[in-house]
Image (spheres, rainbow, N blue to C red):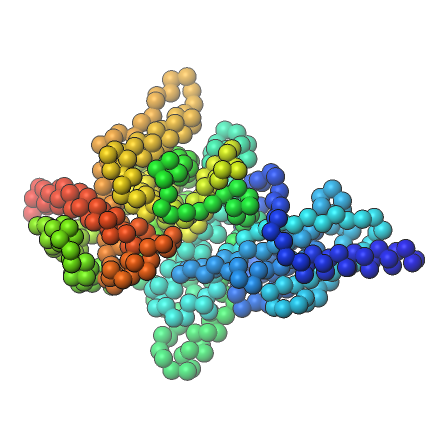
Amino acid sequence: MQRSLFYILLRLYLISLYITTSTSAFTIAKDRCVHNTHHQTTTAMITSNDEPQDLLPILKHALPTIISYSIPSNGKVVQANAEGTPILVRHPSSMSCTSEKLDYSKEEGEGEDRLLINAKEQHEDNVDIEETELFLKRVTATSYTHKSWTDMRRTLVYLRTEVRFYNEIVPLLLAEENNTPSASPLHKHLPTVHHAAYNLDGLIPEDCPTTNAKQPSPFDEGDDEEAEQKKHQLLKNKGGHILLESLSPSHGYFQDSPISKEQALHCLTAVAELHASAWGNTKLLQTINDRLSSAGGSYQLSFRNPKELENMVKSWKYFYEQFKGNDKVTSILSKDGIVNLGQRIYDMAEFVSNELTPQVGDDYATLVHGDYKAMNVFIPNESNKEGEAIMIDFSCVGIGFGMSDVGMHIVHAVLPQDLDNGGEEMLLEGYLTALEAAMNRKQTGSNKEKWAYPRDAALRHYQLACVDYIRFIMGRFWRSATPESFEKKKTSKNTTLINRNLEAALRFIQKVDIYLEVFEKEKKDREAAAPL
């Protein structure tokens, strides 16, 4: 009896010691498993307003034998449409005990940022403790009351899309390969997701299309107190979460922006596998169309706030006036055609968007990431030479042309000097080579033909993507850009280069001006040839 009591006291002491002692040495399971998610949308939600102990049911999806967990007080990452939290979970080693040996009871630890889960010993044998770092991405509807309904809805739809992608679409994509899911070439470019769920009841109907930006607001957006209370009540406990493996530097990965051409090529190779996984599969693309989005992309015109396009001419005029100061900049911005670039983009916006929005049965239609910036890819570091680039943040996936991802990634991630002297062409050809290799790997039968993406079609899609992207940047960001804001954001890795690096912006403007002339002529010729 005394011996048993001794072990109980020793165990509690060791657990509390793990809780109160900081550590930087995190371990992670060596085998990256197939996505351990459940097709559901209404399980227990974890929001930023929840008490720490409410995380336990979510964390147990990843580690059923969890003993305790802690949340760094300064570890939260807050972005415009979600927040992320690294969580250190302590659990018995798989070699030392099973979940049946532990009886869980909850007890608050010191401070609001940590929780101690006491393991009541059922046996006298020792239990070795392991530590695993996880990452929890969550969206809480009540955190976005400052947004208009159009913008709030987009945030909530981002969540729904990403949860559906992991729960419903990823298993279908991996099943398309001829090998086991864990051996799929695409699998190595995806994060391990332990659990993903959302609850948007009363806000967005399950069958409401992602692109329906005109969906009426479910609440009165008045300023009176009664309206605010009803709004808060409707938004309460709405939102969702995604629990992922950690891809921190200690695990062999990093994020950065800008990145080198070689690193960008790793990223483009990864997204080529994503594109190939659904390319030409009409049945799968129809499911993606119905469950995710008929028009993938964070900057897709049908998905944006209409005011961005309405104010396009004004936004460009403001940008022009702010940056025309020195001779070099003025010589570029004062060029015929660039002076009125805002009006030209406005006039061509719908034409370009339509050309970039294929139907599921169209040639070259596929699944696109939709927000393929540098910071949405984890790149293997020097200690992880066998690692592959891992894509994250699939909140904007849907139907599109793969070149939309390529265009966004290059302009978002690569410095202008690295794109000059053939650098941009090298990246485009590198992507196409990777895509063709992935597509030809899928070919079966003795008479299979070598698959290729015609370079004229690929280049046209790339140029359309660049024009479409500047429409988004001009309407969303350049309407308030100044030399001072560029200077302030110059090291902001999550900001596109053309909104923090003037040289990159000018290079892109010049390129789009050339591309736009081609599509303006194409539109004019089509209109002239159309029957009266």
